[in-house]
Image (cartoon, rainbow, N blue to C red; front, side, top):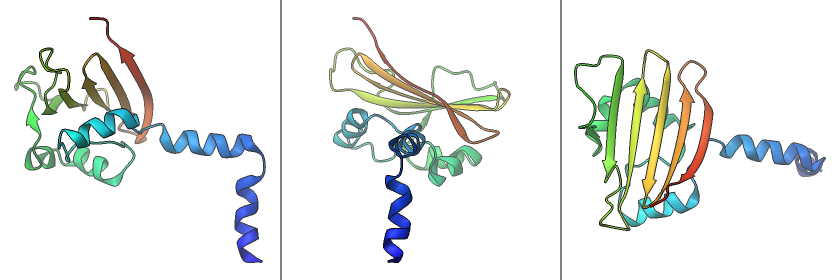
Length: 145
């Protein structure tokens, strides 16, 4: 009898279930990118931004460097408010169609963090507000070659 009590709200109104599922996956990486990261053995990559692990890395960026991430060579080191870290081949190598990489940009002045994942001609950008720790943008782009 108790089990029915808990299951009943899940199946009442399809709209409620859909909005709950959308909210849970708004900070998630597309499964295609996640699979490619695993195939490339980039186990330190992020597939979800709302996890305690990602939030811990944002609060203590030293964890990026301890787990295979590198400081982004394209960013000047004298910038205090912006830090960027890369994992894998970022930007993706045009000579290798299987190259994949991630880049995390932490902007303390604007209070936002951005995770960019690039694979071949596609990229996904997920942005998080550091004040509320909520995802504000999640988009997939197709680049023309």
